[in-house]
Image (spheres, rainbow, N blue to C red):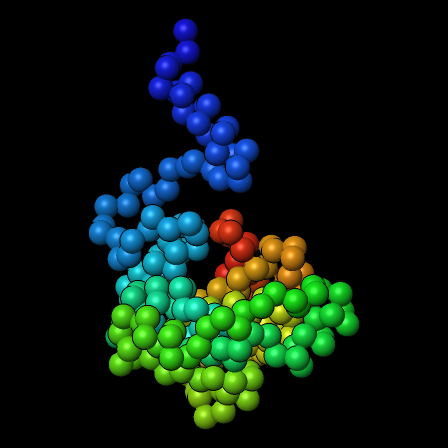
Length: 225
């Protein structure tokens, strides 16, 4: 006779899978205390950020941290938590997609670029940061807003959705990434924004580097040096 607990687990797992969720164990043998609250919808992305941070500190990898594409600051606040003693640059228009990037996106049929991300502001994002004294907000069109910014960088998140700013972000940050550092590119396996994948593949092919896809909600690609 089937184990009742296992049968219930399978039934519940099947129900969750039908809704687009998956019930799994994660890091059950990791004994150290976790740095953040991980009961979030995008557990895989949050947990990978925490693990990357652990590696950065354990190996004494030098550098600042940054996020390109901040929106309302959800992931930026987590970056600020993990890297609380590192300068965090926050790059965003804080007004949604720039028309210059939208033009490239539509002309190459990567996406419609119609999603509205203007319901935010630099002031509201800054107010959410747990370690505000470490944060530097750069509002405007990237890479123009990167003028005067120099590395090294230990961790970078690129979450701009669109092809052109992702490609420009990789061109700017990868040369300044410390050995052992990480770049997370969100939406690599998000077919609503196909330009994200194309930008990563183009940059990696041009520079003969690899990437690792992970199974978070947006299908992030992780690039290391």
